[in-house]
Structure formats: C-alpha cells, structure tokens
Amino acid sequence: MRISMAKESRRRLAKKEKSRRRVPRFRSPREQHRLLGHYCVNPKKMDDGIRRLNAEFIPMPANHPRRRLSLDFLPQPPPYTYSHERVLTDSRGGLLAFVEDNWYAVVCDPRTRQYRKVRFPWGQDDDDSDWDCSYHCIGVFLLDADDDDGSGSRSPMSRFRVLCVCLVLDYMSDTIKAHSCVYSARHNRWLRSWSVTRKNIGHGHWTDGCSSDLLDTYKRIVGRAGGSIFWSGHRGHVLAVDESTGQFSKFRLPVAARSKHHSSKNLRVVGGGGAGLRIVRLVDGDLEVLLLTARGHHGARECTVERRAGLHRLANIEDRPDQSWRFVDAATTPAALVLGAFSDASISLFCLNVETMKLQRLNEKTTMIAGRVFPYELPYMAAHN
Image (cartoon, rainbow, N blue to C red):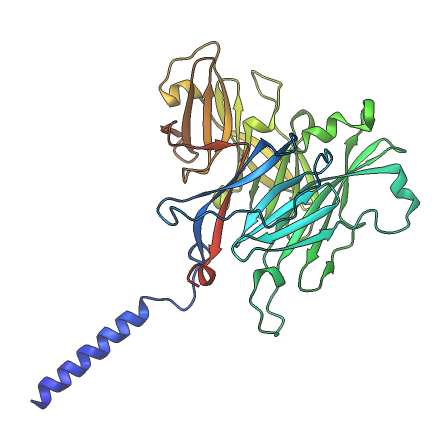
C-alpha cells in the first residue's frame, strides 16, 4: 500500500512539474505578441466632403471575428478644414503612431482608448532661422519602450518612445537635410539633440509653392529591417536612418539594365540574415534581389545584384503588353511581400519567398489590399488580460 501511494505521489508531482514547464517564464520577442488584425490606410471621403487618409481596423477572423478597434476616440478635425491630416506611420506593441498636420506626433492605444499628442521640436523657440526653412515629417516610429521607472505602472502609454524623422528644406542654401529626434513618454520630452543627427541629402529644385521634387520622392517608406528604416530616394538613392543612434546614411542602387525609372512601388528592403540586408526590386518584367552590406570603417553601404529572374516565368503566367508589376500592401495574408500584376482587365496577386525565389498565387477575392497596411499586435500579457 505504501509503495502504491508513493508511486501515485511521484506521478502527481511529475504531472504538476510538466504542467508548470508548459508556460515558460521568459518568452522570445516572437512569442511576446499576438496578432489581432491590421489597420488599413486608404483615402476616404469624410462627412464634410473632404478626402483624407483613414485608418480602419480589419480583425483577424481566427482571433476576434466581431471585435473592431475603432479610432473614433481620437479628436476629429473641425468641419471643412482642408489642411488637417492625421497619417498613420507605425504600429508596434499595441500602440499606433501618427503624424498630424506636420506639427504633432500622436501615439494612441486603441485597446484602452488613450492617446497623447506631442508637438514636434521645430518651430517652438523664437528662432529666426525657422523662417528660412520648411519642415516635413516623413514618419514617426515606435521604438523599444523605456524600462519601468519604479512607479509600478506597466501601461505602454507611460513608457513609449518614438523616433521622428523630418526633412528640412532650406530656402537660403537651396538644400534639403534629414533630421531625427526621439521623444520619451517617461521623461515627457524630446531627448535627442535636434541639431546633432542631420544629413544633407540634396538640392531643392524649387517649383511653384516652394515645394520640391526631391522631397516628394522621400515620402514613401520601403522597409524597416536590421535596426534601420529606409526610404526610396531621388534617382535610385535610398535614405536610411539608424534606429538606435538616429544617424543617417545614403546609398545608391545599381543601375538597372532595362530601366532607369525608380519608384517606391517597386522597391522593398527585407531582412537577409547574417549576410546582410536584401533589397527586392522590380524592373519592368524582372525581379532583382540585391544584397546590401556594410563596407569600410565608416559604415558605408555597398549594394550588389545577387539574383535576377523574369516575373512572368516565376508566376507561370502569360506576358502581356498591358501588364505592369508592383508591390502591394495586403492585410489578409501572413506573407511579408505581396506582388500584383495589373492589366486593363484583371489583377493577379502573388506572395514572394525571397529565399527560394518562388511566387505563390493568392486568392484575389479574399486578399484585401490597401494603400498602407499595419499589423496590430498586443504584448503577451495585455492579450490575456
């Protein structure tokens, strides 16, 4: 009897230990977040008749089929205000980051319906030099949150950090410079010096209204990988900012054999493992994979063509003269890269595996595409509360 009871006791202890081990104490970054859906950004005609960029939440059917995380708690602009625009530029850790009217960063938590609006650092002081410049924010990006300050608050809204990237058009010198700065919610101020992290990226080529052709080319982000954020630039140039230092760098893509046209719609930067980052480029009907590596002591980047293949051959479809290819943002597929073959009569969508250079056909009826798509993930602890 005692032997039987001892075996039963050991069996219960073993079962309890096994159950305890199923929930790891520490989780990898990949396991710390749960995907609830996507925010899709498209132009929308508002009640006042003005078309603005609108972010709409599309839930994942497997997780929350009826739950929609609306952004109706954010302040709405006054009616018939043409200049007002709030543009979603990033999503991370359950938070969203917006650029509002080129003067404010807005960070919100759709789950708790909290938000914070922060004035950008430019134009706040009585600096006469601001009259000679025009500031254009090209993105606000969420960084790793600050450590707990000991107050016991674990709210992401009290610990977030954002990186602001801005292009400054100097009318006097006819130059455009890239600037960066970091805001900390814990310290409630901009931490990084505004004047330190700047880089001259070209000349203005002014047109009517003091706008610049060069400025327009840098408005579209083409990737975030390897600790840097990338924008497609002028004449094949790519602008990059280091998330940890705020320092900028610029490199030029190899000249395409069949085309001299560069567009953010045919360029994406993705992770490439230990060898470096990869740039995927669409050149007319070809797919090119470029390898981006660091060169020299000053961190200069070198970009070389690694692979090239015909898109129609990879997709196994007919090459039509009215067909064009470009990258699209899709919300209903886990694929990182989605390509679209557009013609006058149809649209064909494919997901791309960069490692194998294979295209897989997607269902156009169930694949939702938008101007921009941002995945919305909750931290593990928040997803279970």
